[in-house]
Image (cartoon, rainbow, N blue to C red; front, top):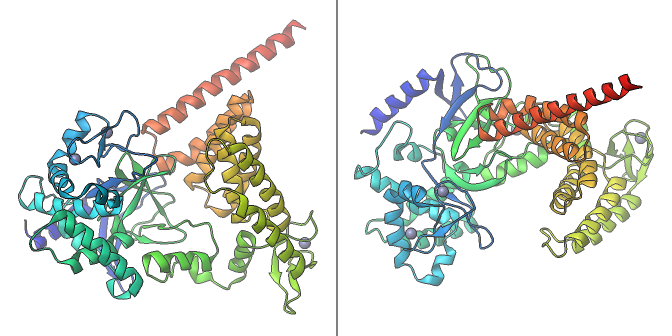
Length: 492
Ligand SMILES: [Zn+2]
Ligand SMILES: [Zn+2]
Ligand SMILES: [Zn+2]
Ligand SMILES: [Zn+2]
């Protein structure tokens, strides 16, 4: 098929889904709605053009379905894993070429075949296999869509270019195509960096990377109206608020909990653009200043005050904007250095043996951070997330629930009301309450989880079905308990 007829096909495909692509100055291609979309509605979905699981020396995943159990290594290349013959068969049309290429590579060089390198190898192989008509070229699955992606090649610094050149060399060594252009590969690495998506499971944990060129048309906003989630490997974009006809659809490329300066820095670094979304355009306005001070600032010297602090004009320290109390620079410095000292001892990812010791260290960090930071601080929130995870690992349900309940209100402040992380946190809270016999509280938390997650995750996936089953079970037990209570009451 010709590229121009593919483009016409794509316009038709989008029109049928009440969408259109326009070119905006500064932003380039952008996706627009041609009708209203309501929260929870699917706007777009797409299978990956190519993808690769995040395999490490510690954990491997099936190349087909990303599952981690019952894996067997491909007997040919010894690089790729499969959960069984059905996944292996599905992938074979592409992997047979990759397998042959990987087999030519010296054994110790195969360790350098990272998920990103594999993604690039697969990109060229898929292009060839589609050109040879072994795999079909379709409206939403073709190399022209990849060619249309931005690369920002001219804005990349020398260090990054050098790295891409080295990676391109390795890809060239694997593929050994006679007519390959190293610059073309390097440019595609730059495209990956701006366009490839991390494929996450329903609990938003990364499983692999993939290229979804249709989804890549959607631009970023720090207060997006849509969200990208994955159902297995399929990218699904859902509306998270009412999106009126003729609006631009936006998703967030980054963690949106952060001050405007933090968000803009990470967008510039990874995606090479200056964000001019509605939220970023508020920079310097009173609300934006308050948000930065809550998310990244210190707490008031008066423990009972919830005010936020700003640097005082005389540079003596930080002044509470509610009670005007001054917190001295020295005090803040001392606490910050205490936090640093303990943090340096705490392992980032503790092993099973030293988990208890790590928990104790993180508790110390948390206590110090509570004294230093505002209660809505992202740093404090991250420490509590770590503690929650570790406590769940060692099955300390009661303590885990305490931290979970501390995290929820922070999420509700730093994320928009329909953000799936709030829903997932309520889900965890509900499960913990259920385990601890707090049935009625569990019901209430699971309802909140369901109400939020049905918008981002839909209602038909296995994950959501499991959530509603848990909710029904908890409800049944709660009414049974109530019944028992009433019974006991009647007996008296
Ligand atoms: Zn599989
Ligand atoms: Zn193989
Ligand atoms: Zn922004
Ligand atoms: Zn105060």
